[in-house]
Length: 209
Image (tube, rainbow, N blue to C red; front, side, top):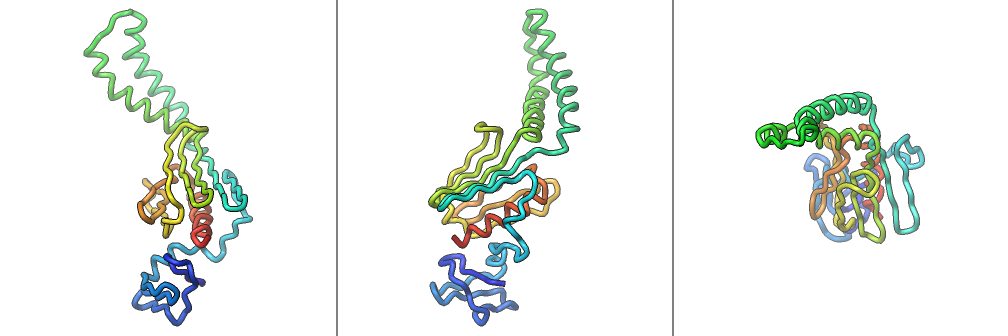
């Protein structure tokens, strides 16, 4: 497996790699780095960018590239009816009755705040499972991570050249990807493991460029 320096991107020869000590020495920039961290920045040798999977679109044009993943999930089959029952029932019962009667009840309104907040969160998750997308793009070193629906959502801009590795979380309840460099940027919640795997390996191919 080819190992490249995280600082200058030069190839590190096998004689400068010490597996038992977990070290790799780069002759080009004279830096000593952890071998395991460098391997985390290397895509799987069996990964083929041409074998795209359903729900992921890749666009490359010169010095710019974009990977777009749909957050559409089968969880929507459960979330849609549950959200309608939860949000519709609780909000109409607490706030709908006040609107119909034309009388404001402060106590009842305060009691309904947890239901209102819960409904907003639940509706957001439901909409993401239906129409959400996760996008990572880069143009001339200026990168962007976006999570949301159409143009509404969470944006994070950064310098792609500061990213040293991409890691994958193994937690089932909090599975996500991380871009690690000058700062850590977490993203990818709600994506299937197959999509996370493809995005992770695709982004690792871009670390050398």
